[in-house]
Amino acid sequence: MLAAGFVGASMLLDSDRLAAKPPRMTMIVGANACGESTTFLDINHQVELLDLLTDLNCERGTTIVVVMHDLNLACRYADHVIAMKDGAIVVGGPPADVISAEVVTEVFGLDCEVIPDPLTGAPMVLPRGRHHMEPA
Image (cartoon, one colour):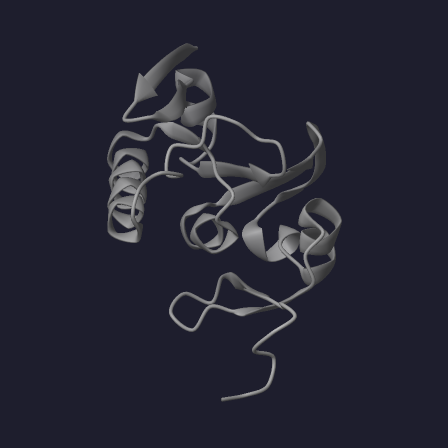
């Protein structure tokens, strides 16, 4: 097993695991996570970085682990997400099995709706705020 750094994201290369299982991308999302590789990037560069990491995952079979708080991007790009709170895993699995309004409320304390992303079908989190709740 080899741990390596790549453009601000952590990669874990494990040839035995990759030979036994198809390549996957895991993203860890949650409160109090650290080392986020996309935090200070504008949206265009966030998507470009995630596309690049997906290319690396698909073309070389590397396992990519990304820590991020953007649930919608995590759901679009990850095969597996892990929701964490206070350093402990709350739930993990495919985005459709993990990201729900209940989990988002438990982990982030945010009231929200979770609907299918119109482009990918992945879960998409729509936060409920105190304002702008009436249809336009």
